[in-house]
Amino acid sequence: MTTEQNKAIVRRFYKAFEAKDQTAFNEVLAPDLEAYAHSAPTPQNRDAHVQGISMFSTAFSEIHYTVEDQVAEGDKVATRVTLRATHSGDFQGLPPTGKQIAVSGLTLERIRDGKIVERRVSFDQMGMMQQLGLVP
Image (cartoon, rainbow, N blue to C red; front, side, top):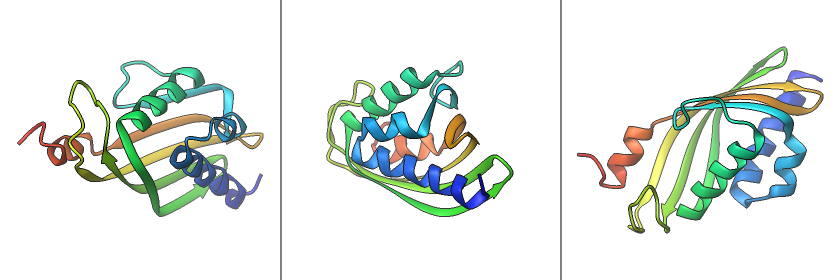
């Protein structure tokens, strides 16, 4: 696959996240996915990663990702994104606040045979907690 095709796969993942599209997740995430996220102490498999996405999507509505930058080389794609959403459901014990968040993040995906086989995710979790009023 070309680097442009790999970048398109990652952008499709973000569109699936926004739409809560389980079918699209199955199409872009490899069955043997390994996902590394700040919120998980060990790598997640595809089912655990999609479950985490589902839990986030239950706590936040109007989810929108803006791809700010994207660079690809070989089978890897680095993406800088901004997540915007509204806190509309329970999140880590916090009842809905109705607050809107805007959080920056960096991800690194590795693509094999048209699917994401590895994700490394880093978001400004502290900034999100501040915006929700959980930390000063």
